[in-house]
Image (cartoon, rainbow, N blue to C red; front, side, top):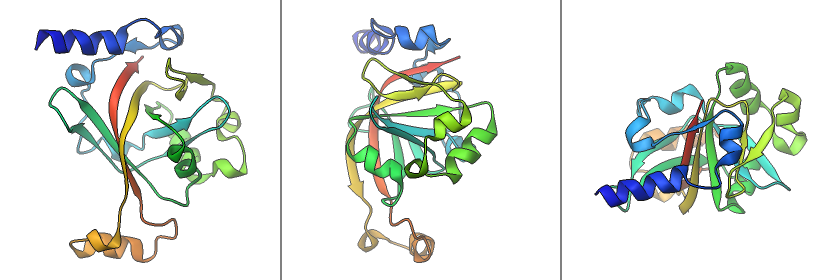
Length: 191
Protein backbone atom coordinates (compact mmCIF):
# COMPACT_ATOMS: atom_id res chain seq x y z
CA UNK A 1 0.00 0.00 0.00
CA UNK A 2 2.81 2.45 0.89
CA UNK A 3 4.47 1.73 -2.47
CA UNK A 4 1.24 2.56 -4.31
CA UNK A 5 0.78 5.83 -2.40
CA UNK A 6 4.42 6.75 -3.03
CA UNK A 7 4.02 5.97 -6.74
CA UNK A 8 0.90 8.19 -6.94
CA UNK A 9 2.75 10.97 -5.10
CA UNK A 10 5.65 10.73 -7.54
CA UNK A 11 3.29 10.70 -10.50
CA UNK A 12 1.36 13.69 -9.26
CA UNK A 13 4.22 15.73 -7.87
CA UNK A 14 7.32 14.51 -9.61
CA UNK A 15 9.62 16.17 -12.08
CA UNK A 16 8.07 18.09 -14.93
CA UNK A 17 5.33 19.80 -12.95
CA UNK A 18 7.06 23.20 -13.06
CA UNK A 19 4.40 24.77 -15.26
CA UNK A 20 1.80 24.33 -12.53
CA UNK A 21 4.01 25.41 -9.63
CA UNK A 22 5.24 28.43 -11.59
CA UNK A 23 1.59 29.43 -12.02
CA UNK A 24 0.89 29.30 -8.28
CA UNK A 25 -0.48 25.77 -8.01
CA UNK A 26 0.47 23.15 -5.44
CA UNK A 27 0.18 19.41 -6.00
CA UNK A 28 -2.99 17.83 -4.61
CA UNK A 29 -3.55 14.13 -3.88
CA UNK A 30 -7.18 13.71 -4.96
CA UNK A 31 -7.69 10.58 -2.89
CA UNK A 32 -6.59 12.37 0.27
CA UNK A 33 -7.14 16.10 -0.31
CA UNK A 34 -10.18 16.46 -2.60
CA UNK A 35 -12.75 17.75 -0.11
CA UNK A 36 -15.67 18.55 -2.42
CA UNK A 37 -18.79 16.42 -2.27
CA UNK A 38 -18.82 14.13 -5.30
CA UNK A 39 -22.62 14.30 -5.42
CA UNK A 40 -22.63 18.07 -5.83
CA UNK A 41 -19.23 18.90 -7.33
CA UNK A 42 -20.51 19.11 -10.91
CA UNK A 43 -23.41 21.39 -9.95
CA UNK A 44 -20.74 24.05 -9.38
CA UNK A 45 -20.14 24.19 -13.15
CA UNK A 46 -16.50 23.17 -13.50
CA UNK A 47 -14.72 23.71 -16.79
CA UNK A 48 -13.56 20.89 -19.07
CA UNK A 49 -10.62 21.54 -21.42
CA UNK A 50 -8.98 19.31 -24.01
CA UNK A 51 -6.68 19.57 -26.97
CA UNK A 52 -3.11 20.72 -27.46
CA UNK A 53 -1.15 23.88 -28.25
CA UNK A 54 -2.48 23.93 -31.83
CA UNK A 55 -6.18 23.35 -31.12
CA UNK A 56 -7.90 23.34 -27.76
CA UNK A 57 -11.23 24.26 -26.30
CA UNK A 58 -12.97 24.52 -22.97
CA UNK A 59 -16.61 24.30 -21.96
CA UNK A 60 -18.70 24.34 -18.82
CA UNK A 61 -19.88 20.92 -17.67
CA UNK A 62 -22.69 20.08 -15.30
CA UNK A 63 -22.62 16.30 -15.43
CA UNK A 64 -19.90 14.03 -14.16
CA UNK A 65 -18.73 11.56 -11.54
CA UNK A 66 -15.73 11.18 -9.27
CA UNK A 67 -14.55 7.88 -7.84
CA UNK A 68 -12.57 4.91 -9.02
CA UNK A 69 -12.88 2.12 -11.52
CA UNK A 70 -10.59 -0.75 -12.51
CA UNK A 71 -8.77 -0.58 -9.19
CA UNK A 72 -9.22 1.02 -5.78
CA UNK A 73 -6.00 3.01 -6.14
CA UNK A 74 -7.02 4.38 -9.54
CA UNK A 75 -8.90 7.68 -9.01
CA UNK A 76 -11.13 8.55 -11.95
CA UNK A 77 -13.29 11.35 -13.21
CA UNK A 78 -16.12 10.76 -15.67
CA UNK A 79 -17.36 13.59 -17.87
CA UNK A 80 -20.09 13.77 -20.50
CA UNK A 81 -19.94 15.77 -23.73
CA UNK A 82 -22.70 16.03 -26.34
CA UNK A 83 -21.61 15.20 -29.91
CA UNK A 84 -22.64 18.54 -31.43
CA UNK A 85 -20.40 20.48 -29.01
CA UNK A 86 -17.10 21.71 -30.43
CA UNK A 87 -15.35 20.26 -27.39
CA UNK A 88 -16.56 16.80 -28.45
CA UNK A 89 -14.48 17.05 -31.64
CA UNK A 90 -11.46 18.04 -29.57
CA UNK A 91 -12.03 15.30 -26.97
CA UNK A 92 -12.20 12.67 -29.71
CA UNK A 93 -8.68 13.63 -30.79
CA UNK A 94 -7.25 13.98 -27.27
CA UNK A 95 -5.54 11.56 -24.93
CA UNK A 96 -6.00 13.79 -21.86
CA UNK A 97 -8.41 16.37 -20.49
CA UNK A 98 -8.47 18.77 -17.55
CA UNK A 99 -11.31 19.79 -15.25
CA UNK A 100 -10.92 23.18 -13.59
CA UNK A 101 -12.63 25.34 -11.02
CA UNK A 102 -12.70 29.15 -11.00
CA UNK A 103 -13.56 31.68 -8.31
CA UNK A 104 -15.43 33.87 -10.82
CA UNK A 105 -18.82 32.34 -11.80
CA UNK A 106 -18.91 34.54 -14.93
CA UNK A 107 -16.24 32.32 -16.48
CA UNK A 108 -18.51 29.28 -16.32
CA UNK A 109 -21.46 31.29 -17.64
CA UNK A 110 -19.49 32.56 -20.63
CA UNK A 111 -17.79 29.25 -21.46
CA UNK A 112 -21.18 27.53 -21.24
CA UNK A 113 -22.93 29.96 -23.56
CA UNK A 114 -20.39 30.41 -26.39
CA UNK A 115 -18.93 27.95 -28.88
CA UNK A 116 -15.23 27.57 -29.61
CA UNK A 117 -16.20 27.28 -33.28
CA UNK A 118 -17.06 30.99 -33.22
CA UNK A 119 -13.87 32.31 -31.65
CA UNK A 120 -11.25 32.06 -28.93
CA UNK A 121 -13.27 31.99 -25.70
CA UNK A 122 -10.19 32.09 -23.46
CA UNK A 123 -8.91 35.20 -25.20
CA UNK A 124 -12.33 36.86 -24.94
CA UNK A 125 -12.25 36.28 -21.15
CA UNK A 126 -8.60 37.28 -20.75
CA UNK A 127 -7.65 33.77 -19.65
CA UNK A 128 -4.11 32.50 -20.17
CA UNK A 129 -3.66 28.97 -21.50
CA UNK A 130 -0.86 26.85 -20.02
CA UNK A 131 -0.05 23.17 -20.51
CA UNK A 132 0.74 20.25 -18.24
CA UNK A 133 3.78 18.05 -18.85
CA UNK A 134 1.45 15.91 -21.00
CA UNK A 135 0.55 18.92 -23.13
CA UNK A 136 -3.00 19.18 -21.76
CA UNK A 137 -4.42 22.72 -21.69
CA UNK A 138 -5.54 24.49 -18.53
CA UNK A 139 -5.99 28.12 -17.54
CA UNK A 140 -3.57 29.88 -15.20
CA UNK A 141 -6.51 31.67 -13.56
CA UNK A 142 -8.13 28.42 -12.37
CA UNK A 143 -8.24 27.69 -8.63
CA UNK A 144 -7.82 23.95 -9.19
CA UNK A 145 -6.89 21.69 -12.09
CA UNK A 146 -7.40 17.94 -12.36
CA UNK A 147 -5.75 16.23 -15.33
CA UNK A 148 -7.07 12.91 -16.57
CA UNK A 149 -5.92 10.39 -19.15
CA UNK A 150 -8.88 9.05 -21.12
CA UNK A 151 -9.23 5.34 -20.38
CA UNK A 152 -12.64 4.72 -21.94
CA UNK A 153 -15.17 6.52 -24.12
CA UNK A 154 -18.62 5.35 -25.08
CA UNK A 155 -21.50 6.98 -26.91
CA UNK A 156 -24.60 6.64 -24.77
CA UNK A 157 -27.42 4.99 -26.70
CA UNK A 158 -31.17 5.35 -26.51
CA UNK A 159 -31.46 1.55 -26.37
CA UNK A 160 -29.71 1.67 -22.99
CA UNK A 161 -32.23 4.02 -21.35
CA UNK A 162 -33.92 2.10 -18.53
CA UNK A 163 -36.44 4.70 -17.37
CA UNK A 164 -38.10 7.89 -18.57
CA UNK A 165 -35.53 10.35 -17.17
CA UNK A 166 -33.04 10.12 -20.08
CA UNK A 167 -35.84 9.61 -22.59
CA UNK A 168 -37.47 12.89 -21.55
CA UNK A 169 -34.18 14.78 -21.39
CA UNK A 170 -33.06 13.84 -24.88
CA UNK A 171 -36.49 14.29 -26.47
CA UNK A 172 -35.76 18.00 -27.05
CA UNK A 173 -31.98 18.10 -26.63
CA UNK A 174 -30.61 19.21 -29.98
CA UNK A 175 -26.91 18.61 -29.12
CA UNK A 176 -27.39 14.83 -29.24
CA UNK A 177 -26.97 11.98 -26.76
CA UNK A 178 -23.79 12.45 -24.76
CA UNK A 179 -20.52 10.58 -24.98
CA UNK A 180 -19.15 9.36 -21.65
CA UNK A 181 -15.40 9.74 -21.05
CA UNK A 182 -13.76 8.00 -18.08
CA UNK A 183 -10.37 9.46 -17.26
CA UNK A 184 -7.76 8.28 -14.79
CA UNK A 185 -6.50 11.17 -12.67
CA UNK A 186 -2.82 11.62 -13.52
CA UNK A 187 -2.29 15.03 -11.93
CA UNK A 188 -4.08 17.49 -9.66
CA UNK A 189 -3.19 20.96 -8.46
CA UNK A 190 -4.83 23.78 -6.54
CA UNK A 191 -3.99 27.25 -5.37
